[in-house]
Image (cartoon, rainbow, N blue to C red; front, side, top):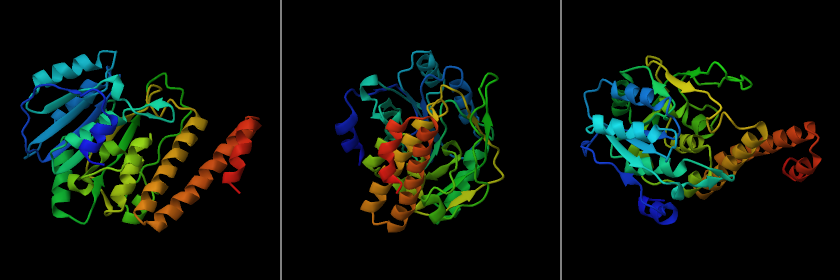
Length: 314
């Protein structure tokens, strides 16, 4: 799917492009998606603006029609940094629903299609970077190592004082990842730590718009294009865990259903591209997820929901 196809299918009202003076030829595009991040977005943007580079970069800031003051902060930042930030103000009419949940997928994909850099990095609006050398180190590596599809580094989770703490901390890879293991999602770098070459994905599959785990889908595609380099010499991204986060706030059954949907779409995508080894791998994962959901409903005594799942696990 190219940008025109994306617009024709999903755009009902054009986003507002706020006036800017950003270079038309940046080396790196940093995609920032934000929605109801009034307490976090300033720290996110400051951590990007503090980057020390010998090249020009652009910040693609997609604001998804927040009602908490986030939009106003974004507008102030583009006025203050017109040479760095391109701000897109989005509308509710364009939000794409997945699993009956309104998502930020339109916002995220719009940012991607607007990117003009040779490399793409991400930082979600409630995360922030801690290393001002991050972009320089990552682009230097990718410029010298064309066989790698991406590079990444570590992250730290930040919990609020009143966080219920009923979710385990995330596993993170701390070593290089082979192409196959990345494509199979056996290891999963945090997207806000990743930098990759933009030309690797000139078009995006429509299946990717139909999942909530867009980061997983993107990493699987990149895995088919080359291995990932772990860079231990970069300070961590801070990944905020809070109940308002689209993933952190989900119940176990909802998370399993979301993962099942992602696996179904990944299987469809890789089947079209004749990646039979990936199809087989994800089909095994899918069966395990159905089994987990089946057991979950049994433990809750919800047999009406459990029984229909039995045919997927036998």
